[in-house]
Length: 226
Image (cartoon, rainbow, N blue to C red; front, side):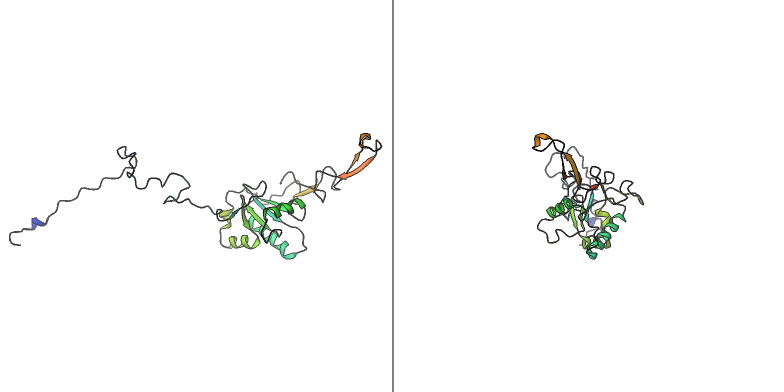
């Protein structure tokens, strides 16, 4: 080690690294010029190119008619089964408590809604038992599922972007009943027609027919809030 001075162990400093330029024209078009290329191709991609899932993506795609961007809830106002009636009220209160508007379809007031729900829930055990909640074309579940999501604090995220309801507002047409007596038959669900002679009957005779405008209860949906 004789003859070796302290200066023999000095190393020249390394030059500072050149900053990487994502828009450097010299590297454009080269296959390995940007190791992160492809990550930001779509605004729906995550940090590593994995698509970010929204809060509704984990629910099954089942969309009621006209429910693509709304909250549709199938309920019942009959008190025959107390548990079912109270479950419907609980779900309604949970959603409206977040200021979200509900498209409520009462299966006890309209047979068409009952059949519609049965078709949507085809093959499921809980097919005809309300409440059933659909958000933006996704089936969220019944009372148990919705209230669990509420307890977890995630219901607001799931309902984000849905139409809002003004606090304390009441429909001027139906008073939140959602239905009105038929305007054509006054709620009787029957109409009297005058029979013409060419139908094989005496001209001027009358016949009673089913009103085509209302449901089996002589009701029609409120044209204001439906």
